[in-house]
Image 1 (tube, rainbow, N blue to C red):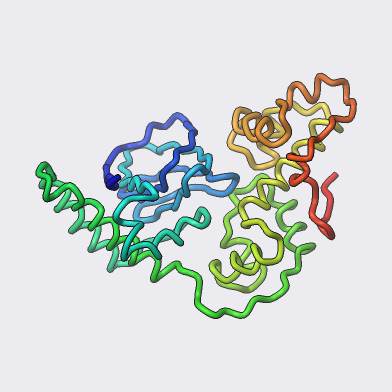
Image 2: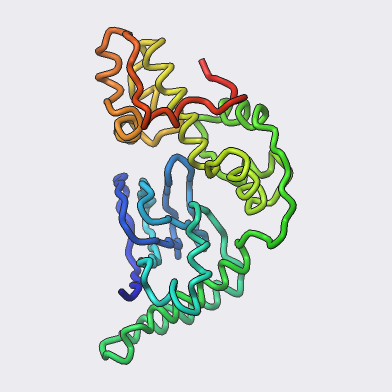
Length: 277
């Protein structure tokens, strides 16, 4: 199935969804807001984000904006055959800025797209354009080969996450804490914890939100904000997926212990991980 490239503005209202194809979103002008599995923030002009398939993401636009969006099915020519190594870009969500070389390529790409592709011979032209961009991004963002892994100070990382739960945490923030590049940090983090950094942060946020729901009478809207979720709806959706019930139902249980099924045990703290109360 071929890839598609489109240019659209994003509405100011926050929307969220998942889809079974990978996606790259680049802000051409204006700005947008993206949260992908608990990580994200403002995306300004000539910046973008990588949205792996089946990752829930929240998004909205600010004022007059335009986004260049690449929809990339896993079997698209841009990600298969001689381009198959490019799928590594979608191992985890990531935010990035564009240097002058890629900005010039975007200008060329927009010119090509403006011509339209109506014939069968041109049906994969968008994949060709996408593959060039993906290759350029991978060269800039890809994990360095043969990097030496090191043990990360998880207690320090836990403390930092807890202190910044309400902020727009990014992998780059955690990587700076460990004095590593973002790619090297992500590789070391996954090797040590079995989770990507954004999965780990989301788990911490859910655990902190659960404690506040059980041990305080704060409104759910306030709990969502304090634990870094975009809004109460985002908290409720993530909570149901992880614990099997909504925050409201947990609170209505009159503070009684909630049985956590084995499938949800992954959201308990890791061995040696600081608990948040």
